[in-house]
Image (cartoon, rainbow, N blue to C red; front, top):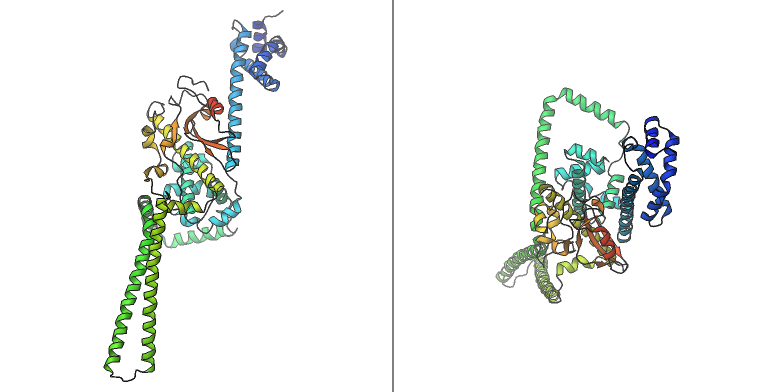
Amino acid sequence: MATDVELLQSYACARSERAFTELVQRHIDLVFSAALREAHGDASLAEDITQTVFVELAKKASKLIKHPALAGWLYTCMRRMAANLRRSEDRRQGREQEAQTMNDLLSSEPSEPVWRQVQPVLDNAMHELSETDRAAVVLRFFEDQSLKEVGLALGINENAARMRVDRALEKLQTLLAKRGVTSTTSGLAAAIVVGAVMSAPSGLVASVATGALAVTASTATTLAAVKLMTMTKLKLGIISALAVATVATPVAIQHQTQTKLRAENQSLREQVEQLTQLKAENERLSHQLAQSNGSHLSKDQLSELMKLRGEVGLLRRQTSELEKLRNANRQLQAALAKAGKDPAQQEQTEGLSGAEYQKQAGIAKMNYAKYWVLAFQLYAEKNGEHFPAGFEQALPFLPEEAKVEMNLAAHEFLPNTPKYGLTPDQYEIVYQGTRSSVANPASVIVIREKQAWQTASGRWARTYGFVDGHSEVHSSDDGNFEPWEKQHMISPASPSQ
């Protein structure tokens, strides 16, 4: 009877299928039984593990000829293959769970109705983006390029391109929301891909190219001047956009509260000016009437006088009514303040249903957690792969758009934007080890929301950020997240997941 070493040598040197088949028959019971225990009785999974082990044996046959105990190697290999399959299965289940959870929390949107909302205001909103963000959106969604191609065009790597496209799309969503477009980032992306670019007429390419070449050949000097003017305007546009972006955030809160007062003051000033003019004209006509010593005014003069007196009385009544409305407004704001409700917040949330509010809150919390874990990634790159021990250490790497609620006082709100609790004190760090020591970063939690929240369907939800930089909302029927969290949380000294 040939030994394991002789059979391995025969297969490795002569590719003897008979020798390899005999090895499989000799050891398959050992491998399958151990695999069945690892698979907790799942025979199908045990068969997959067994198949993988003997594939590995065939690949490494020449290196194992001198191994002292092939059975021991097969047993160890089975353990490793089982762990790899479990990790793959965990990742698959995690992706399915994430998709199912977001399907429960967020409603999908058909792209055509969204595009009908977006179409009239898209280009104006696009030109409010910075040049870099605008280029990222155009390359990714208008020209349908891959993230790798976007990165090459912008001079960055694929991961950085993904982050830039995500941020640019979120900024565009915010700009469109101010114009009345209600859509998630995924719905907006789908709508832009479907409707933003349409095929030009078939003959337009030839006519445009011919015309442009003809003009270039005959008017090179003029074209140079036009190019200079175009570039100058483009630079001015970029500078203006940057200036608007720099100034817009600090004045956004003041603008909402001051706009109504400015409008009221302007209206009052105009009415006072009209009233003053009418009073002067009334006095002039009255003086003429007194000087006439009882003489009769002409019919036209008398009609004009009566008309002016009527307008003066109307303006006086309007001024009085305006003052009453202003007083009532002050009283309403004071009543809301006593009841613990800010008028701006009351106005922003009254138009949202419970389900819609929770949908928007879920999106905002997922984006916020994603911003933080990406900031953790950038911190780790600068600090020997170590994640920060506190949020303040990663704060310099946090994008400005994630600091909005952090920079607001308790009584302050952005226009048309409720608060969702997007501040670091609402989250906690659960992993402080090194990034490189985590074998499966897509399944290990770095930060989590401190308090779970109840959805409109009665389930409980909680936001998590993972080592690889993604975030997700996990849901539970009874609000008990501990069993699931134990599967996705490790200590710095246990990087085996």
